[in-house]
Image 1: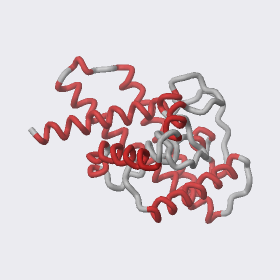
Image 2: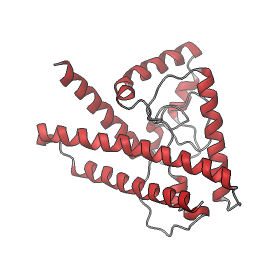
Image 3: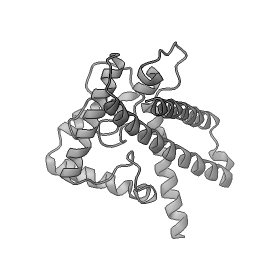
Image 4: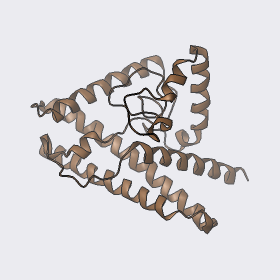
Length: 224
């Protein structure tokens, strides 16, 4: 019974995570995709891969907004320069209330954290030192990304750092999406009424897009 309950919790979490991926990561573009340093495409370079909780992709408490997108509430609206309602709500909370909300969300995603302890996209509690290091690495990553997009000549060492980080992010995204697809298929197997062809098509498109970007990164690493 406990095993079935755990499976259900993981399934629901995966479905919610994939739903957020749907909002955050646009589908493949049909417009011309120019090549940048290392043969990377603009689609690969600009793909959002932040944590679903920290760094701005889900609920941003940190104030670090570089290369972020609006929270899931705001994304459903027409893009605009207005601040997201999610962020406004968070700013209205006291430090104690924010800490409590953090703990609630960490607890919610705990089954996935235990399932994939090394996945950087799953919310997990970090020490102040770990948070500082993470922010430092993210700032470094996005600085290099900007330089590539601006067609500046990025040094080999810097490019290597960027490509390694990019590959890790792609692998983490694939891990979550593949596991989500597995759980979705199990749910459909148990009850065909849960089938959602459009949803399944969407996830397959995401998997194909990320896999293609991953191949670009590996090719760039081999040529770097």
